[in-house]
Image: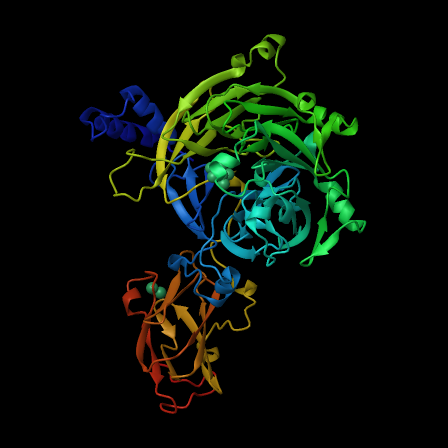
Length: 637
Ligand code: K7E
Ligand code: CUA
């Protein structure tokens, strides 16, 4: 909570800064605004932010956590790429999770939901690059599962969209390829030989464990962003597409020929049922539904040229598609869509999939400006759309509209706030739930061009915090992040209580050791196993003997039960750095190929004698050195 008494000091500093300039003269922000904005986003030393902002890290493969309103970066959650800071990607467990890949492209984080509200359990993120999906547990802010590569699916961009009770994470393929994967066909035969796929990734309600539930085969369109339904649209999901032209080269030109592309409208509950009724065929181990043969599952709706985002509002009545190449957002009325589907108000079909009549379902095209990408909602009847080309956030009013407004939808466009520059995604706190928190919007911009001190040609991205609580939007803060946030989720800090140590009784690792007597180094053939304790400020044992040709496995337990008492284990010249949180056991394996004495040391500054927390791995030539002793018998000082 904020301590009011800190404000005057902050105020004085800010005003002083305003007067002396501090190199800020190029900004048009007035002194009054400067003060107000600073206070709105100011979190004094010792105070805490009110919200978590979980940013996707794009091709960094990570997730970044910042606080709102301060916009301070607080931590990084490694997911698809190694991160030596937390030892991620060096211990056996995380290496196994990452599989054959050392990078991913995280786009859309999705918080788990119960009854269309965040339940604070998990954060799911997609990997656009290697067709995977990961689960971060909010109990410890760590990645616990990476599923994939998902079969029959290429370019897992159109996810992670969570259903109302986290039954599924719904995904759509960005790319189409010949299926099953591994089959080769000439891209010239794209329209005939290639396919896209929609996937239902099942989530275990207790553990969050993900598995591939079923898939829906689609024509080779490039599926883009989507969202899930709620309320009246419960059980449905929506995606936009580009390239309904089914072009395979010179995409910039060939995939932008038609005036409209198609949105996919999916009845995922019907898909689930169809699979249960045996209406699917297996492909690469997954039940696949061909929607041309199983009616009632997939429909197409024509939508503004080369659209991007498709966002369901908190009431579940309105689904808004961003036009990208059309200066308007298209508002689909879900009730009308339902009626059109029931009455078969179709304009024929596309490859056996009914094409719903545009006029029958569209409530209006709102002239928001150039380059509308994504839309978010505050739960008070307003929508906020990111404008990539105009570079702003546009606030507008959702239906129901008056007759007068309907005649001229310019009237429902209420406010614009410039962003810097070219906003991709934006996020309003809780927008994808039935109960948005409103209050804050974060614009995630693609170009930070000159907004920050010069750091050479590799530029960060900019994110801007906008107060949306009033009639007019107000930008109050700006921050920079590593490339590259696409989407984010905002969660109230008070809704979760992550653990700060792993309780000893929960450590089920069979190789965990808690006292000296259990530690030691043992050998069986060329397998050498060391069980080590890390505690302020030593490793026990602090000497491991082995020979060239050995396979060394080291299990290290941090036996501390004190917050922030983290130890690392960095082994010189072996590319090893594992980090153990309090109460945690980590395991790494190395093949010993060169003789020598290799120091290891604690990599996390843990105490006054942190520097002394070190030891030696002695790698003798094959057949030399002391024979390894049974567990517990190793010399200890
Ligand atoms: Cu618009 Cu991947 Cu959601 Cu980037 S995507 S901005
Ligand atoms: Cu343990 Cu530094």
